Image 1: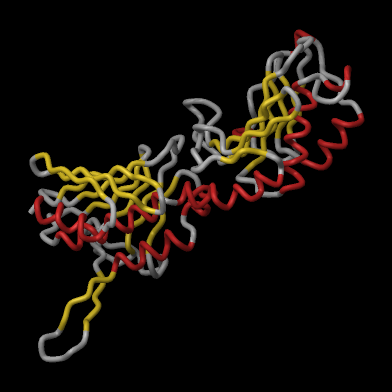
Image 2 (image 1 turned 90 degrees about the vertical axis):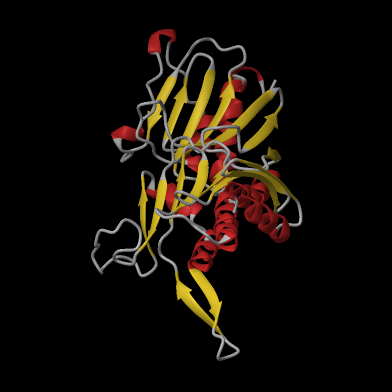
Length: 320
C-alpha cells in the first residue's frame, strides 16, 4: 500500500521527493513554488499532515455536517450545510478559510466512480474525514484505514491548498508592503518572523501578525508594529483605545523613567493610525491593531510613528 501511495504522489505532482519508512510515507512536494513537507499513513487510521510556518497556537477543526459522518455521534441538523467549524480564534479562522481553501475542502469531499452500464460518472460525498490546523500543521484524518492511494492524495492536495494560506496572505499583503516602502515576507508567520520590514532612516520597523501576548494568553489576532528605540531617555507611554477588551491589553509600560510627551507630529499620526494599543517602553515601541489590518493609511501612520518615537526624532530631526 505504501509503495502504491508513493507512486501516486509521484504521478500527481510534477516535483516531489518521497520515501517510505514502514507504514509511513514522507513526502516533500512543490506547490505554487513552495516546498511542503508531508506525512501520510493509510492504516490503522488514515492520516495526512502537512507542515506549516508558525501559527502561534491557532487551532481550527472542520467536520462535515453529515449527522453521523466523523465521530458516530448525531449532531443537530441546523449546522452549516457544508461543515462545522471549531476554532480558538474566529477572526483568524475567517482569514484562513479563504475561497481557495474552501473550494479545496469542498472538492475533496466528492468522490467519483464510473457506472459500468453507462458512460457517466457518479459523484458521492465522503464525510468521514476531519480537517485540522493545529500544532503548526494542516492535517486530514479519518477513524478507519484508507485503502485507496488516490483518495489519500486527494486529501494531500486539499491539505496543501489549506496550508498555502500563509503564502496567499503574504502575496496579498506584499502589494501594501511595497507601497509603504517595505520588504514583505514570502509567507505570513503568526507569531513568528515579521510579515513586513520597513527601513526609516536608521530605524528598522517590523510588522508582525500575532495572536498571543504571552504563553497563558488565550489568543486574539493582532497586527503589531514595533521598533527598537535608539538613544532613549527612558520615558515610557501606554495608550489603550476605548472599548478594547481587557484580555487584549498589552502589559503596561514601566513609568519610573518618566512619561513620553505626545508632540504634534505624534498626535497627528495617532489620529491617522487609530491603533488599539500603543506601548512605548524604555527600549522599544509597540503599536497594536486589533485584527489583521490591511489599511494603507493606518498602517503607514503606525510605521511612521514607531520610527518617530524609536529615534526620538521629536528632539533632533527626522530619523537621525
